[in-house]
Each structure stands twice: as structure tokens, then as C-alpha cells.
Length: 403
Image (cartoon, rainbow, N blue to C red):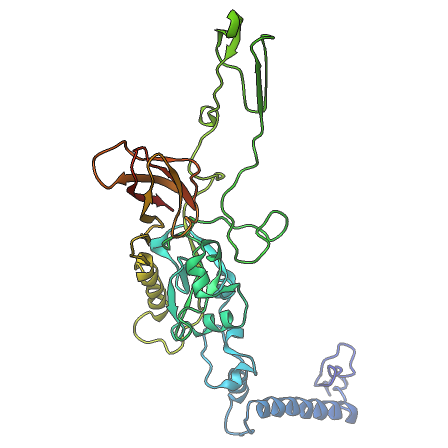
């Protein structure tokens, strides 16, 4: 485009008619000025024709709105809809997402903490470990299949609670599975906090760490003959009494007790201050072929239905003589029987290891005669010891509850 055309060569840069009665001369229009006018008009026409051609239009002398129509064809107004793909200028539709969507949204498959499970925004689903249809969320599945998020096999996810911070390919054909950040799936360790992947982390994306505390170390020594004692770490001396030993020797003895709940709040887990909400994951941003219903909210509601139902895998187990079953909420019940000679202790290995804790073990005998059997150490998430207090061999039945 040419530079701005110079003004007419007059003292004030304006045209004047002149006045023959006073002898005032009119402005002389030179050929140079007329050539500037002609060149400027031709340049502007060339620019306009180029604009029309870009919009696929030809000049039509009878129309007075061709510039406006060309601009509308090339660019979208704030509230306009594209009439054809030319208006998108080669960009994908997602490139022209609304500013409100871009400001309030997250990239696909990113988590967000939602303060109210009953008001999950459209486009998101609760991270409860549920399976969803690939056909309903094709972009989300494409991101999972591309490895944009940590992925585990569905078998490993179901069998190993520490794998449940990952996505899976679901049934391998038509579904995929979300992570269980909210601790809702049967057997999960609990609702999760999130942290970085550096020092002290699990070291692998999507891997869950169980709760833990730093080791507490202390020592207590009591010498009744020297009448001295020493306590370190969390131990302190309690009440003092006099003890008589062999040969009539006497000395001081001390009671010792350690109870953390007397000093700090205690719970079944170690946790910082926190507030309860719902982890959600972005599954889509735009809806293809929306109808009369709110398709975006409908897809979100479908994802919530998948989270609310109890999957049949929650009741999986091994219903045999020495077996187990999983219960909704993560509890596991195990049972079995063992033949134990009189006065003998045997160690029973559970059919499966409890993922996080052993709560209780009970044992009964086959019959009423004889001393009652007992459960003795060692016992942990994988085993327990059973003692037959009678003098004869008995079949002992045990039952263990854990999580």
C-alpha cells in the first residue's frame, strides 16, 4: 500500500476558490496532485480486490457491502458462527475455543480439586477408578492411548492398590479406567494427596505411597542395684517402687509407658491439616453435534454414574476352604482351617496378603473338649500363628479381617 498522499501545495494545505473581484487567485491543481489522487485510488482499489479474492469474491459494482462480507468470511466476530471452514484459516476448531473455556479449563486428562461432588462442572468426571466408554470420550481415550498419562494394566490396577494412581485401557476393547484419587474403589488405600516426583517420592508417575512416619527411637535402662536409671528418646521414667531381689537385696524399680495419644492427635493414618472435596479429571472441552439436551452435562452425569455403582470386582474372591473375599470399601475377609497337634503352634499364611492392615484374627476348634486355641505372634498382613492348647490333634478354624 502506498504512503499517505501529500496535501495540496497551498499555504494551509487546503483548496480555495479564489475571488476575481478582489484579485485573489484560486488554488492551482497541478498534474502532480492529480496523479497522486489517481495513484492513491488505484492502490486502494487493488487492496480491496485482493481482500475480495482472499474471500473468494469478485468485484460487483452494484454491491456496496462487499468489504464487510469479505471480512465476515475471513474472520469470526465474537458472537458469530463460521459458515465454512475457510473462516478457520486452517486452524483446528479447538484453536478458536472461547476465552472463558481457556481461562477456566485445564488440559485434557488434568486433575482438578472440586469442592462439591454434587456440582462437578461439565467436562469433568470424578477420579474414582471407574471405567468409561471410549466412544463417549474419544479425545480422552486418544490421550491415554498416546501415553500422555501414566498407564497400568487393568489386572495390575485391580490387584495392586499402589497402582491406582494410573489410568488403564479398561477391558481392552471399548472402555478405559480412571485413576482412583478419591479412594472410592474397593481395596484402595484411601483418598490421596498429590506431590512432586523428586526426592522422597515414589519415583514413578502414578505410583501411590502408603502413609508412613519417621522412625521413633529411644532407650530405657534400669539398674536396680545401682539405683539408677536412664531414659532417652520418647521414654520417661514413671513411678518409683522398692523391689527386693535375691538374697534380700533391694533397689529401685520404675514403671515405663509410651502413649503418643497423650501428647498428639492420633488416627488410623498420618495426615496434615486438610479439607475434603472431590478430585475430578477433565475428559472433554467441546461437544460434537449437541442436541436439545445439554450434552456436556449429560456426559459428566454418565461419568458420575460409573463412579457411583459398585463394580462386581468389588466382591471378587476365592470361595474355597482356605479362601477370601473383597468387600466394598476395601475390607477383606479371609478364612481357613488347619490340623494342629496337641500343645503345638503352627503358622498360617493367608491366601492373599492384606494390602494395608490386619485388624483381627479369630480361631475356633472342632468340638467342645480341651483347652481353647489361641492366636499368638507372629502375626502381620501375611500370616498368623495358632496354638492348640489341648492334648490331642484338632482341626482349628480361623477367620481374619483386614484391609
